[in-house]
Length: 321
Ligand SMILES: Cc1ncc(COP(=O)(O)O)c(C=O)c1O
Image (cartoon, rainbow, N blue to C red; front, side):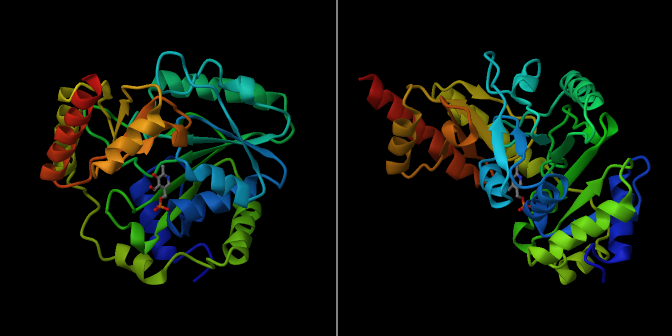
C-alpha cells in the first residue's frame, strides 16, 4: 500500500464523496480527521506562518496548529451570536496567513454554514488570493458532514471555493473514533504529482505512515454507507427540551452531537463548575472562543439527558433564591 492508502479503498471513498473531478488520486486515507488536519496544516503552511481559525472552534485546533509550529489567529465573533462574523473575518488575515481553517457543520454550535455565508467567505478569499502569489488554502473540517438533521443540508465548500481541502472521518457518522480512520480530499486545482508526495512525506514524518490497514479494508465490506440518525435526532430534541425548559437560552443544532446554550451568569467557569459538582459535565464556551456559552453532548441515553435537564433546573432555582 502507498502512504496514501489502498487504491480500491480510495476509489470507493471517491465514489461516495461524489465531488466533481475528485477521483482516487485526490483521496488520502488518514488517521482520523485529526490526522488529516495534521497533514494538511504541514503541507500547506510553513513554520511561523498563520492559520486563521474561525470561531467558535474545536479547541484542539490550537494544539494542532502549535504542534505544526504555526500560529493560530482567531477571527472575530459576530455581535449577533456565537458565529464568526463572515463580513469581518478578513480583518484577521495578514501577509503571513496561509490557511483558513473552517469547521462546518460546526462543533460546538451544530450550525451548518448557509449558501450565503459560504459564498461571502469564498468571494472574500478569492479577492484576497488575487493579490497573492501563493493562495490561502481553505481547509475545511467536515467531520460532522453526515450527521445533519434535515431539513438542514450541508453544503460542501469544495463546490464553492478553490483551493479547498476537506478533512473527513468515520468517527462520528459510523461511531468509529477509536479506529482512527479518515481522509483528505484534495482540490481538483492541485497538481497531485506535487501535493500527494508532500502529504505522504508528512504521513511518514509524523509516524502515522498510513491510515490503519484493517479499518481501511473493512470499508470495502460495508453493504452501504447509510447512517440511521433517528436515535440522535431524538436525543437532540430531548436535550433541547430539557435545557430550554430548565430556563436556558439554547440553540437548536442542525447537525453534530452537541447543544450550545447561553450560561445564565457572566462567569461561565463558575456555572460549569457548579454543574460538574452535581455530576453534569459540560464544556465552557471559552474553550471554543465563545465566552458566555457552554456545550453539552447529547450522544447519551435519554434518561441521562433528562436527568441533566432536572439538574440544571435545580441549580438555576437554587441560584435564583
Ligand atoms: C470538529 C472536530 N474535528 C475533528 C475531530 C477529530 O476527529 P477524529 O476522531 O476523526 O480524528 C473532532 C472530534 O471530536 C471534532 O469534533
